[in-house]
Image (tube, rainbow, N blue to C red; front, top):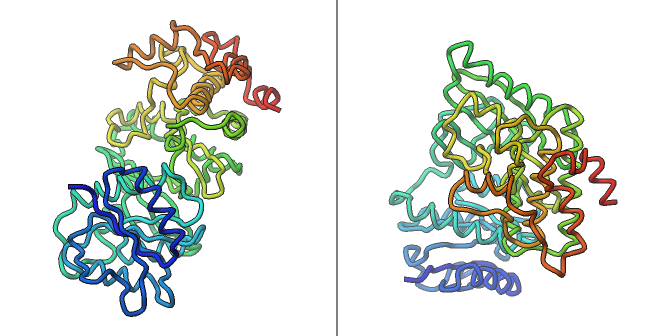
Length: 404
């Protein structure tokens, strides 16, 4: 049976625009747009259980969409509801999640890939959710981790030893992400690597740079280590790579990545896990790097496999990192070059059936060759992904000079 999606919005053009993106993301889906009225905010004979997903606008004529959201969530068989919020209005997001929305979509700048991800996640949650009670709690289950001065909104992900939560700072009403690492070691010799990891994040917290994630708080509470950081409404960069992008845009993004690397390298921090999933997008289109010090965290908790963003991937590792050789700033630049190739072409330069085979290719396979229309950027790419670190740009600053 095809996926059934209902769009409740009183703007015809937006319904058509969103319907177009939904149809491209789910070609077999049945997509119905409904223009609400005061008398009929929902389609005649509405039965919530007939739908797999509902998009609901924040304002329906003179009516607050949150009122209709509450009515929908009280209905038996209500599917996941994605609330359509004003662009950049964090309070609207908070109120929607607290009222029971399963997710939100900002109206305005949302990309096709971001819309597709929202649909996938909402449908996945709907399929695994237990039957709803007649009067569900609007805020859902509270996490076992509580952080003073923060209100829990929803869980973003969970692994065997780590969980990620979306929270609201009570004082500033700002959306933040709390990444919580459970099972802090009891033995002193096991505890030191975790202390090193937290120290690296403490260094990052002192950086004020538009292309580096903002760290608001970090520490250890009970048997948990936590980091509170900036929330990125635009999702991760990987969602924008599948179809490639114009060279000018790719160069702009590479410049932003280089500026971020220049900032962290200046304080002695190597990223070691630069990849699209660790590059986040803001609503204004700017990039920011996240997840620092992963290699050192690996010593403290070697089984963080549930959250894909915590461990690195061989697709973006420099040859020396893949072989366990000590690395410097040029290893991060190599990873940036692999991401740059993927930005231009929409594909990874080295793929194989196993991680070790990919690592071998990074060291021994020929340098990736760009298609003829992109040959202008071949020299820049080769300076980034040279097998020998000595043949690469010596620093992020040198890369920025070349880009300028």
